[in-house]
Image (cartoon, rainbow, N blue to C red; front, top):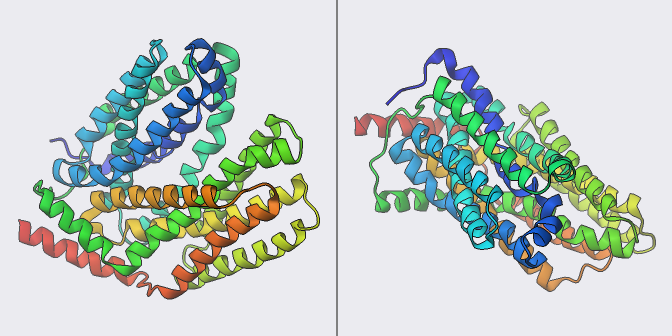
Length: 412
């Protein structure tokens, strides 16, 4: 198996960063085309919306599985095959008129994107360490935020210019281009393969889940992302029905949400060397103060400005917390790099899905004050988990690096 050369690590780093937003592109780029797809495929809007749900479910569950496969069979060839299959499935969607075929392809795409994204997260744990590793893992949520920001606007341009099929042709070309680049400069980064064993994988997952700070990190990631997802569910009603503004304003508000997350993630990178727990507590406390004041204020006055103030304060602090915890959990168990990346991604997705469903079904978001109540529930949850968890900070990396070296020596 071809190993990656030292001279090509930097080039492969840029490739890995370029592929991390793929999940966002695959989810969001064709959202502006949903009405046109329903018309062209002679089906209902609900049937078309199911294509998005199937992808999200497949992507979330697959992340729990693919980590163990990548630790056993390496990162390179599973990722290469997944890029090729994702590209082929995108073209299949573009050139079919069967909604059932599209459903099947979207499920396949969820799995292949999970392999690609988890594999690229694992790449950084394989080739970097110490402060350099923290610098790159802190970039993940910043880079990931590019997808939800850029994809809908890019999709709107494609839809206006060439119709809904052009979105999937773009995805196919995007993935195939990276496949060619990987063929030329890529290689395997795993130092020591682990024998494939379902029991071994489950034992590794059990060890990680039983580690309080790792599990707490996944829960907080789920709570932070639930804020963003819940807002996405509620915003069309709040903007278009309560404030009587156009759907275009909903889109611009979504863009503002993505920019807010990006600002929070960027700030976390700037403050990367500041004490870990102090950063989390400060950001979480700021969230609680902000949401308390906004709930009281919006009880008397509600406008687009107050909604965007909610978005900026809650999503930027949420992005800050998310970025810190994503970096922390990914490097917590470097000896299980693939499994950890998969468990983190799949785990927080499950938490987000459960929390979002519970909030949607238990709270009627008819105005911004109720949106604030939902934000408050999530913010209080984050604060309690942060203050009640014993965070081991940088020592976790040192300890687990030693464990990884020991396990590799034993395996050899």
